[in-house]
Length: 111
Image (tube, rainbow, N blue to C red; front, top):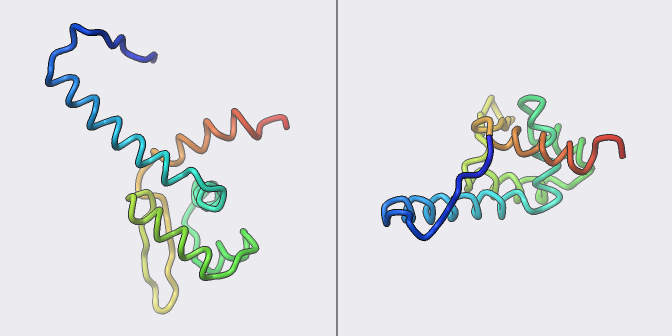
């Protein structure tokens, strides 16, 4: 699957759709453009984790983890689930996992 060909003959409707999609893609990329958020997504790609588990995995304070989770939640990349006093997070859909697989292949594999 490759990129489509964009040219000056595109109709206005297709150009508008492309602009809307570009905005959504830019927001998605901004949301993951932080090493802490990338690490959270890496951990969540393997399954649901509690905030406490993420704190331990990241060796980070609860406030920092919560701040990054809040941004990921705002962008619709993660979904919270409460069980008693514990909040668990999981990926909202497969997009973050797909991106994390590409990032891993480009930057982590065989390094």
